[in-house]
Image (cartoon, rainbow, N blue to C red; front, top):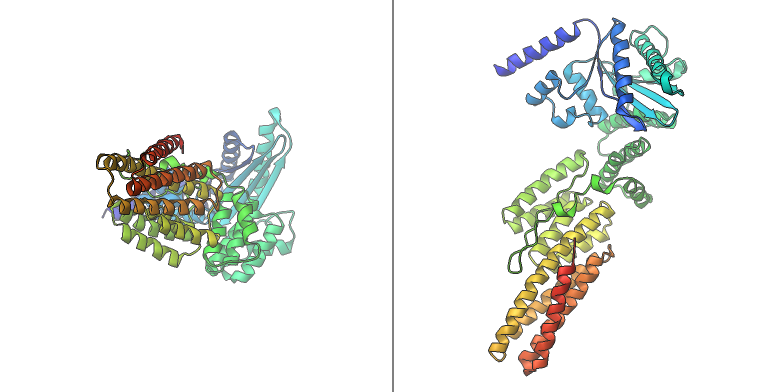
Length: 502
């Protein structure tokens, strides 16, 4: 019953606000480029809305996530909060427009530098599944600026309305009849190959937003083609949507793309993405290191990779492994991560989690082995991911060394009080082997990072191993100088662990 009344309320809201006959236009807040400000955005959007509604031919409203109809559809789970956000993709915004019952979706772009102000308006016809682009540029500033923007938006609106109601022969007065036919073509009738050709033409003409839209439609037709993902990545990059470009690049990699340009593309896209857009600070992925005698407990890395088809699937699988780990089911968590690697061998996150879980269990050789596979396959997400992983693993090793130093000091006091104990040789040998394993992991990390943390950890590990050797000498031959040497090595190692900062 509630659902029935909700649909009635939504229908009444739509009819009361917009009327029944006139086409409904949904205007999204403009995307700001260059030096454009929110004041510029408000001026353009308000002017566009005013001219559209003054025409008495259409009804328009500026989109907001707080619109009652939007909130209602999210509550009814017909739309998700991601789809209704202002940062949603073009396809998601079109879906919102269709779900809300609009005929057209308007996506403005506002670009500004010192003296040039440019407006590009992309209009999506949700019934014909076509898109048209309009643009205007002003070069004045000061008191005449608002008037110039007003004039520009007036011209754009007039052209939009003429095209909507077929009062002129072309989408844009500057384009010829052939281009008009291209723009009005029903994209649903084209094959993925034909859509790519059309997208390439638009990209060449620098109609980047339209190219993105067309490449997305091509992917809908051929979702398993990694080449299409790279086409979309290139368009996103030219649009300065660097996170989306990198996201599509990794979609292509996950689908098996291995072209000669793979590494160059990786560098190209990663170089333009800010570090904090992808990996949260290491302080957020580790708890305070436990006291000397305590256990090391680290939370799984919390990643903020941009959403995509593959990322959503992988992240859902990672959550299962993470929850198993948090609940103490280590072997089951490792099995879950292994299954992710088998299904998505070119995504780094499951490898990384396995490294950290193994290290947390002091299975340093296993951790190093997984890390070597990750490195050999050259699938690290970015240098930021490497740094974050090195910091986390270093924190685990450092905390382990703190515990080891405390244990060895206790052993030293015990063997002094009991004049040596041959049984302790076995325990000391086990501890020595563990130190060597931790050094193996440190050296493996060193293949990708020159972090000072690793240098300090190596020195600390060597000091601890020297202390173990000295204690073993005392147990075997009873040399008190060996005990003094062990004590000195342990004190130096302890000082170094206190100097390590993350």
